Each structure stands twice: as structure tokens, then as C-alpha cells.
Length: 492
Image 1 (cartoon, rainbow, N blue to C red):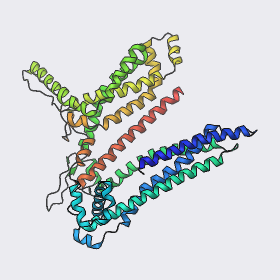
Image 2: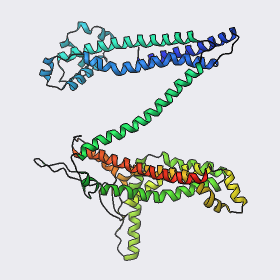
Image 3: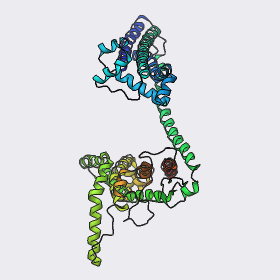
Image 4: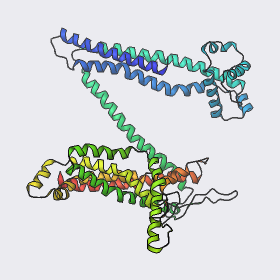
């Protein structure tokens, strides 16, 4: 049976167990003078869980372990290794690909493979349009046939065991149906375990990401001094020439300044526009206007960032360049442009447009959540609506607004596509917003793109950049939490 067929069969058995357990519990309750400890629906869910969960877990473990076991059982003769001069992993990959190609043959031909000579199998596969790698030997083809037989045997054994476990769980659950069965407690325990598992996956994923970056960063700093990385002002990660030990210069300062500068320009544009839009929608707009404006603003969040990049490259950048040329011509008579098409200003403006829905939507929800009693009290004391917003609503909503701005800042720091198209890839140090700069994320992508050796400093530097970016985001979170705690104490 296929994986999908096994899963559907197990789920069908779970549905049968759910219905049967509910009916059995109702029958037990009718025949007894005592009241059921748990409702019938809990008995049904308990039976469905006992039927499906152990069987599906067994299938998942089997599918994870089976390929490793099958590969270890398919022994590669020493003669093949000498003949092909291939690494074991590559030989195993070739055997697997040949086996997958053999499975593409019609069923009637696959049944007669035992009677076909290995020498005749290669032209048979070629006639069916299934190429066999030129590195493959006859012994590899025999191993592929053996691998397919083992996989078929493993699949059959898995099907039998999974269905047997599902049926056993169904019978076990139905036999346990009784008046005092704590089915609800059992179901809630399973649900709680599932929630803990989901939380653990999220936490372990974060730990895994940090550890993967940290270990590679330690390897990088064993080759490049941390002082030259964190305090260097030149970014030239060139490859070493033949016979040379030079590894280039990995100065972080130009990338870090470019990241913070572009994010600052974007926030400088997005925060006022987004926050004022949120205040208008929450405090002044009618329900009809709000129902139209808010969805239109949120549409901006659904536009792919590459589209924003094209918008910056084709429209905003040339517009700012031509506008600066006209202004310069009117003032000095020289119509040369003092703004480059790819510049910090271009990237910041377009990124700010992208961030407006993040600020406005989150801030609107936070401002709307401020209790109505605070507004009514302020208005009752004679304050105007604008004074109420400034003196009451915004201070009360400030912790949430800070969190929204933190999310927006993290989004700005991690942006890549807009910056690479609107600001370029030049690692410069400049305070002029009309010139080009680049960011950390762009260099992470560029250092991990192409045919690179992942043990060289040129590639390992991407992990050092990643851990640095993670540390910056962590510091922003700590600062935001401190601000949130400070103001929350005043309004709790």
C-alpha cells in the first residue's frame, strides 16, 4: 500500500473507533445506574486517539529508519569500489537512482526482472527512456534490484504492523469503555502533550538556528581575528591567489552602518505615516471608512518584496534622480543629478512604504484595545478628542505600539530584495543619503551564492554576519521589553 492509502486506512479506523466508542459508552450509561465520568464524545475521541496516534507514530519512525537500514544491508563489493573509484555516499546515491528508474518500468516487466540478465537490463531501461548513469556498473544494477526487493519487503511489513497496531488500539479502547473510565482526563493529557510538543519544536528550532550559526562563527573567528571583523572598515572578501595566504578583509562596519542607516530612513518614513493612519482609523474614521481603508492598507503587506524592488529600481530611483537634476538646474544652472538612482534614500522610501501596513494595522488594533472608560473619563473632564488621544490613549497604548515598532524594525533590518535593487551592493561608509550602501543580509546571500567552499572564510563569514544580526535583534527585544514593563506598571 502507498503511504497515503495507509494513512487514510488508519484514519478510517479511527473514525470507526470514534463512532463505536460513543455508542458503547451510551449503551453502558443506559445499562448502569451510575453516571458516566466523561461524556460520550470524550470516549469517542479517546478511542480515535488510541487507534491513530500509535499507528501513525510507528509509521513515521519506520519511514525514518527504513532507508538507513536498507542502505546498510545493500553491501557494495570492494571490486565495485575499485572499479568505479567512487565515494561510498556517491555509490549509494547511484544505486538509489538506478532503483528508482527500475520502478518506472511497467509492472509486467518488473515481475520478470529476475529472469533478465543484468547486461540486458541496461538497454531495456534505455528503450523505456530511463537513462542509467555511465558510472554505474553491473554490480550496482544488481544492488539496485536488491534494494528494491528490500524496500518492497519493508513496505509490506510496515503496512501489516501499522494496521495491526491501529486495530489493536481500537480493540483496546473499546474494551476500556466503562462508567468510571476517565476518558476526558486521558484526552486532555494527550492534547496537553501535543501543545508541549509544538512549543518545544518552536523553541528547539530557535536553539538549532542559533547553534548552527554559532558553531560556524566560531570556526570563522578561528581563522579571522574578531577585532578585524567587528572593527574593520573595509569589506573585500576576495579569494586568495595561488601560493598566497591572504583571505581578504572582512570589515563589518560598512555593512552594519548600511543596515542601520537604511532601516532608520525606512522607519523615519513608515512610523509617522503608519501611526497617524492608525490614529485616524481608530479614533476619527467612521465604521464605513474604516472598513474600506484598513483592508486597502493591508494589501500593501501582501505585495512581494521583489515587486517593491522593481518599483524602486524603475520608478522611485529614476524619479528622485531626475527631480534632483531639475532642482540643481534651477538653483545652479547645472542639471547634473546629486542623487543616484540606487541610493539610501530610494531604498528607505520604498521600504518605508512596505512597512506602513505593519505599523498601521498593529497600532490600530492596539489603540482600539484601549478601554473605552479611559476615553470617556477624559472627555468627561473637558478634554478635546485630540487631547484625549495625546494624553490618554497613546500613553495607555504605548507598550503595544513599542512592540509593533519593534516588529517593524526587525522587518526592516532583515529586508534583502528591496535593498539589493534600490541601494546596490557597494559596501561604503557614508553619511550622504543620496549615495549607495549595502546591508548585512545582502552580503550573507552573496557569500553563500555560487560554487564556494563552505570551509573557507569567504563562506563562513556569512554565519558570523548572521549571528551579529541575531544579536542586534535580541538587543532590540530587550530594550523594547524594558520600555513595555516601565509603562505597563503605570496602567495595570
